[in-house]
Amino acid sequence: MTIESFLLKSEGEWKSMRSGHSLAFQQFEEVISQIKITILKLTDSKVSALLSSIPLQTGIPTTPFRMAWNAESDWEPDDPNQVSSGECILIPIKQSENNGLLIRSIGYAESEQAISKYKLLNDDTFTLSTEYGQSVAEERIWFISPNVRCRSSVLKTISGNGILQTSFSSEVRKLDLNG
Image 1 (cartoon, rainbow, N blue to C red):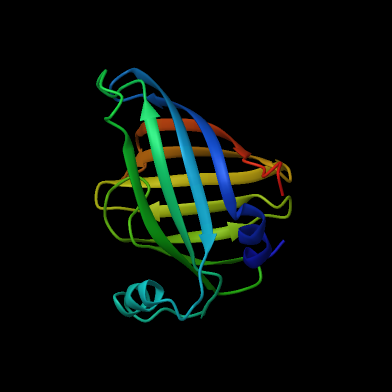
Image 2 (image 1 turned 90 degrees about the vertical axis):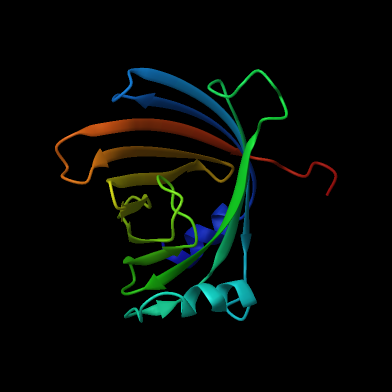
């Protein structure tokens, strides 16, 4: 699988159920999310702006996309209007057929721009590794059918000596039954 085909398989609306374990605080969290992945053109103004904001990278920009989410967590206050939401622009920079960089306007673990290293494994699993100021996030995403995918993540200390958080998500594509 190529990065382009992985992202085309990922495009659409997904319902996600995530279980997170904060090992540092000995807490457990359940999160229900709505995720929308939209492929963008390289000429999109937000894509151009993000590319121009980073140091020159070796590789070929390909298949940029927007990811938007709405999430409800059992850690949230009792007010149902308190929903976590956001969006980010992501741009793969292909360095070879199976790996490269992923530029993120907002990171997964910390709310800052980030550059991740990605790799597509022989079993079509997509892996990401992102170093932030205080932590390192490692993610794995794989499809178990065309409309069901799984995601796992581990958040470690920057030294790699401690695991701060782990999570597992199952994501089901929303199908248009009228179309």
